[in-house]
Image (cartoon, rainbow, N blue to C red; front, side, top):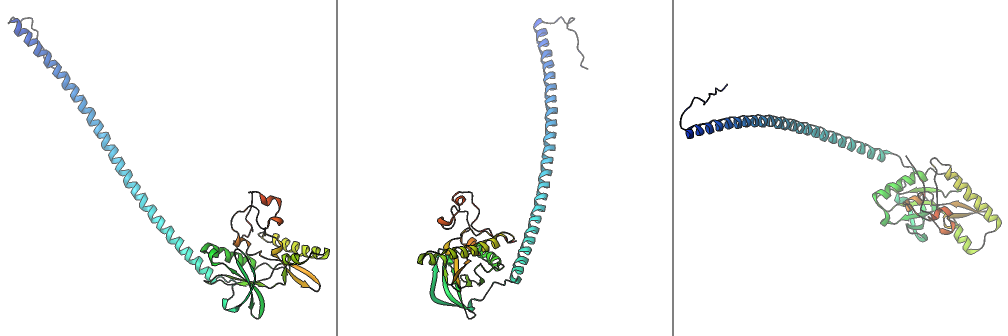
Length: 289
């Protein structure tokens, strides 16, 4: 505790007394400033300690995040390894999976007779194991890895469709070349017959019944197969005695030929009213697990 003394007894020079009072006041101010500086130093030291703690916490978070990142990178590598193994197993399974519809290209004998041409390819008269057949040849321009998988998928479905009013699917090639789609050979088409003459009432009844039975079979399949391009060109004819009978074709390749959502699919004259709207399903609904 500083000791203060009274100046009442001091009888020196008044100027000296005044100088002494000013010096004492300066000392008092310096003491106060010193206290303020010490307080500021204490505050700064506390702030520095807080900054050090925050830095340590941040460094620890960085360490934790780096550890988590390494763990996630290892997990990603494990998942990639698992996915690669699964894909390899799937490819091996697909190679071993029997495809009853696959036939050798060497067994197909092509002729120079073209039976028809479409945007997706052409139909050629051919021979398969001694029998006359219709061979659809897909344009190479529309082939891609995705389209090839889609083609294989639909061949699997087409090979399971068995009905006397459906065009008989014989098989297809599945090599590196342009796919060949082999079916039974029919005598004519409904379009060709209509260009020659009007249909009789009997022809209309019999052919319509054949078409209806074929569509009923497709719709009752599990899952349902919806053609959405029934036209005179896709109804092929064969003669039973003097009576024309009909078979529906392109039930196994329509989705391959038309994959996207379309307005007014197929021939306009045969389309239903709702086919003119944008609320459409795909041209053929072929679902295969």
